[in-house]
Image 1: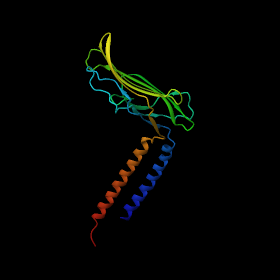
Image 2: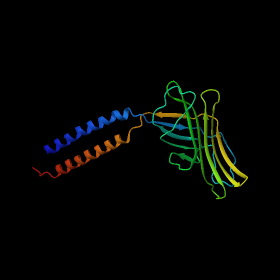
Image 3: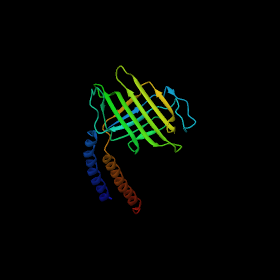
Image 4: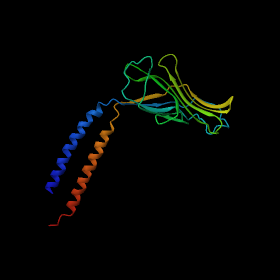
Length: 219
């Protein structure tokens, strides 16, 4: 029994040192998560009988993105950024870094003296076969917000070509700015892997400890 306890102690110390060596890497990691929460649409166009689904006043543009480095302070005017991963939705359609048929992705951001986002431009378009098979649907999400004179604007649209020269569309608009939340230093996956592996090892050792204890002969 004493040898088993010594084994557990000998495992705990190296594990703690290994995890501690990884935590500084996580604390200094540069990937940063930016999460956007838009406000519900102020205006929704009439539904088209040709296009299934509809925008509603409860929908909004929301999403998130991860940048390899946090944006510096005082980036003005807006600077174009390339996220390592992203996902945005207008409540009806979703566009992400996993979407293979994006025809357009544009994102430019502006920060204040504390690195907070105060202005943004975003444009996403997806081209895919339309729902009736006789044209092309263009699904788009747009956002434009400036820190000073221009205000904010968000837009979601779906259009359907009904003939070579005509089509129908539905859209929704919001004129109020949403809000951004910033989570710095996204932990590296290796930290979680190491912690889980360590917990598994300790769990196995602890289980063996209890089994051996339960099998001890009674005095």
